[in-house]
Image (tube, rainbow, N blue to C red):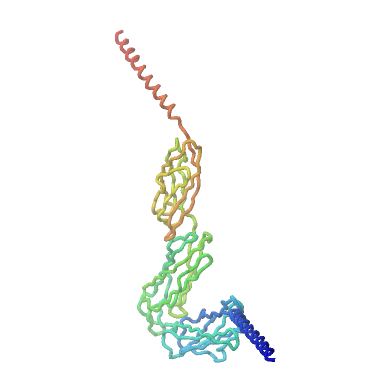
Length: 411
């Protein structure tokens, strides 16, 4: 009887161990299958949040994990000077979020009338399933005023691209000059005096198809006096496969108040034409040697720098190996000469023509063409024989001429 009890205990103990092992394997697997959430504030309007006014906050929550989240919820908990328009709107239930799925929700907050300029914080809590732990992330919102009594008006004065005309694949900058067009320090409107200062509270350049703006939006806090200007620059990347043409980026500016906001279309030119290299006389080598002459032309609409030309061939040697020209203005033509040597027994060789240049900060190297070099052979021995015959004829003929003249004198 004791042996049977011991045997039963052993069976129970084995089952218990198996259960522990099973739970150890299953629990991590189920935990790993849960969603991994990421929350962000992607926008708030107006920017900055105005004192004594409402601000609309847009929140995005995304499942960046490998498993599904079955009952996602988010909760807004703002700190002073922010408060919810209604406490019942604090929690927003989203439901199922599969991997790579996202949901966007909006909250409406009030900015206290006694708030100060600066920043305020909001806490956003989120959970993957009902009853799960709430995770928190804190965001700062800028608090200020989007309205000023100043009456200065900002206008776009000039736009400069560097390089002036882009090529596909180029990087560069687009710069603007914004000017306060006021001519006096004050102006009277309806019997009240106002200063004519101006402000650029923010300025954003928006990307377009084929052109990416890599700089962040400008945020300003200073005053631009009458007639004064401010310069802004944005970095841009041009796509490799963009087509030639004129593209437009949108410059959006917030001025003294919403009534002073402006939007401008900024042209950006793209032109793929560059260096052209044309032989100005036949490419011929006589007895394995010769000099080639090329016309090099800049076909691009703006100046190119560090221009050089190189001939490439496995059979021929060139001097110089690379002809450096330097800067070339649009439509400028430059003539170069390159000496070549090769095997006189061959009849022709293919030669590639390569050009290197810079458009702004961008280095380019292109094969601008290929040509066949003809090789001809002249028999230098025959020429020597002819020359020797002429010398002999002169030597023999000279005494005869002298004798003839003497005989004529004797008569």
